[in-house]
Length: 450
Ligand SMILES: Cc1ncc(COP(=O)(O)O)c(C=O)c1O
Image (cartoon, rainbow, N blue to C red; front, side, top):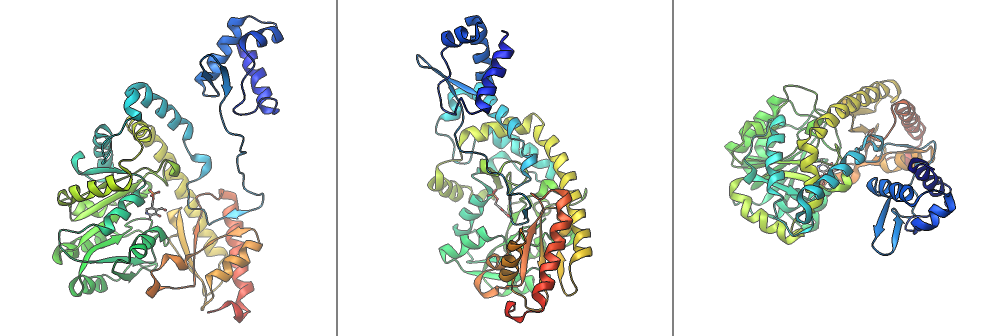
């Protein structure tokens, strides 16, 4: 029996459950006897399985099967889930990333498992500095921090003192709920500015900057969560001018900047790279959210305070995933992956937009459908999003009530957020049709209104 056949035999035993995760494989001698083949063939098969990380060796004990016994969770059939915020599962490059993790261990050895720098591996920060140039973000590695998800950078920044000595945080309303939690859980002073399918009112923003003690303006400059809105270059330029004029800092959350297919679109950072714009970027939506990897470009004057806060929060981001990210970026895997994602999300966005035009009833408006990730549907009259979400659940369609994406004084209850990232192309239309149907059904019943 050849070693390839032995591997097949082991795989069959795994598939039929006669070998369970964590269980010891038959000893080399016992299996060679059972399959009537040489010890060398068994050893070769086990070594190959080890290379593929299917088994591991415990010296003097034998070979064991890798994995846990928990089964992969699959979506119930017929469910159309517009509520999930993660990237398309079928496009998650975890195998490539696994290779990068192995490479990182081979290359950096025990360094991958030691304490490290609070702001991240210097070699990765150099790599990020090069990578960010593709997004028109030119920054020295000394100003770049690796963070445990971009949410960590946002969460640390809100409570730091800013060089302008001001106090309030200005924030688009609605915005993504973890940022709301960062503010409210610490009782920080805030000022909300309404975000619609037309963006924000820049005169109103100027009024706020000039009349209030705004330390920073938090903005998601493209593919805003939840509206999907992308600011034009002119709007971004004007916001940066206002920030300079009234000594306000901008926290620009460019969590999905990589997905922008508009060739000339700049981040706000490009209009003032001096430190006035603090830039954050996530690797969650475009890579693997469970890695918890993000980055921030800081003003020089805030690096010391940020480093202390980062150290206090978690000492540093896990080193192994950082080492792997460096290899993933440097090898060009990231670049190739992003090219594919851009096309995919663009296509989903176009399907969604057409479906919204086709199926949403009169009086219902939508925003950001072409973003391919997040968009919102504003319900007619004063229909409550919560009721619609409950009603759609019964039809096997999940949507997110956006009420918690507002700070308390600005709350609106007639907005749902939908994300097409995890919905297959062929189910988008059907899902939106059911949403339209659901809205029509509630329209006649006043109990579902505010
Ligand atoms: C607008 C926005 N910024 C930041 C984040 C946080 O991303 P990360 O997973 O990198 O912490 C999210 C997550 O959904 C988000 O929607």
